[in-house]
Image (cartoon, rainbow, N blue to C red; front, side, top):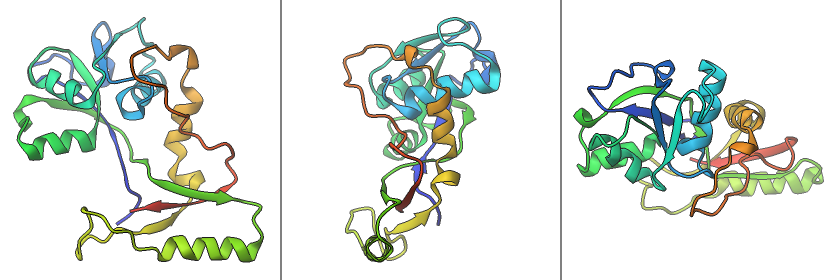
Length: 201
């Protein structure tokens, strides 16, 4: 049905006076770990870009060290707001760990792609065609797959589909990388932008 990925959700408690991202000024935003896109980097970059809000100047960042902790922290009214991944939020809703009445969403980003395979642009054309055919014809086995929802790789346009990820990387100030107990993950941006990509869907 299209590119597979997740989204950044910014959630608050139901009775909060925070109605939109700009209202986070003078409040605290709960984040997961510095290496997380949806749990930290996307929120910081997009709040600065869209609202002019500077982290730890216009609002304060605190850490949960986990998506579930962030979501349940909002449900239990321990924090003002949290940056979380929409798939983690939906999982906890399906499991019954939280209910829709436990939070209110004030922002949701575009899809952030994941599970991507690429190959170098300068492969010989015949080899590139074989690699491309092998990936696109591969039928992975997964517990998530079903006849109604088969998993497969689809061709994507890196320039188009990863535009949001590149914006986040380009606008994220590396000086904002705080130190936590979680190891630092590699950057979200590939070593070169002139690549051909496929994605598991």
